[in-house]
Length: 532
Image 1: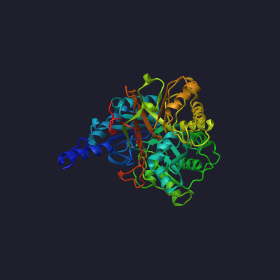
Image 2: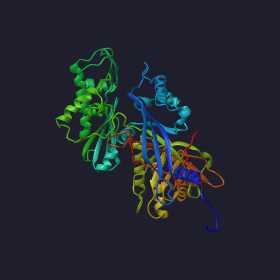
Image 3: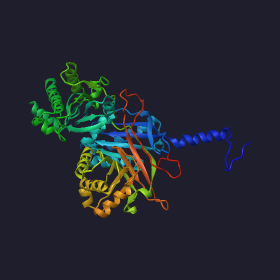
């Protein structure tokens, strides 16, 4: 019927369906993920299905999360302890194995996941035992140890407070009251401004079914001394003394929120620096286990002071003595990571600088983001300070671990501007550079190779430099960098993004605008996930 100068085909119905499936597969990815949260007081697990879709921009290779379906939530487990106060990894393993059975999900069905350790789970003996539980899945799982600042940030994201601050364009203080600590996160416009934590929580003391004290943490002893009562294992606490202890806990939290000069008790209980007092708070959100009682989603006594604290806080809120409007951000005790997706991207060797290809591959490198504008004149000290702030936010001590510094390059690639950026980076990683450690830089823009050359040849950075461009990363991302593939000089890059509940309605079928990104792929099918 017509004559063309190139081969072509007229597909039948079956071929059209196959073609349609191929087009869908090229632009859509679905992963089954698992999130495991192991904390001082409680542990839980969640399975989810994550849907990623390629942006509709012309020639775009970037994917975004367009939907997440929660497949199954575990019950909340009181984190099991042995008599020596170490976590009972055997009981924890049985809980996790049972979760897979109850959800009717096989381990081979999981594409990726995240294990978040907080509080007591971070202690060396506990962390090692818990890590062993997931050794077989180590290639699929991100394992993040969350210090106080990082836990505050995760709680603010997971609760929905960060998303709420973006929608409302207000400054929110998220108060996450857990079993051993209370975390504070100041957020505005979808970003964290500051965080802090104090040693006040609902399970600093625990009671047997008959009311005897079976657990007393040191911060509880300090607060008991403050209110003139004595705590002893095996003894019972009178209703009056119990209320005195709760009142001290609540007043300490409120004192931290008020951000005045702290009294001696608050000083003793501070786990981080105090929150700055110069940021106006528009409203407050609550998350953590105690918030479930505050928002009337839980009523069962769990043998600790969580319910008592919530009752005391609720009375303050009912009298409007708190001083701030209170929003329910949507998630309470489950204000944590709900899954992790992972997918493969590739970056052309023409745009990267890798000083020691033999150092690859790297796995599960946490991403910190340089939260400063790189337009106009670049001041090295501003870069250095921003790196230090980002490291503090993630509770990472510079020089002790490899991190990936992500940033967005803006403006002309003039040598003076790139040199100033490189100087600032050196200032932010002094121990890493002195120890000839790995310096991993991932950026939006096309200066990866040039920046690497400046660091190596002009600033004499002798350690391994990996400088990749054309990739957009966010905080809470983790990356794997594969071996250099010859002869095409292609570097496989796996980006693993932690996904948080952001829907304030807290439905089990929600959407998130957390972005997951890809860059390039030589065969045009940038949709495969990796297994190890």
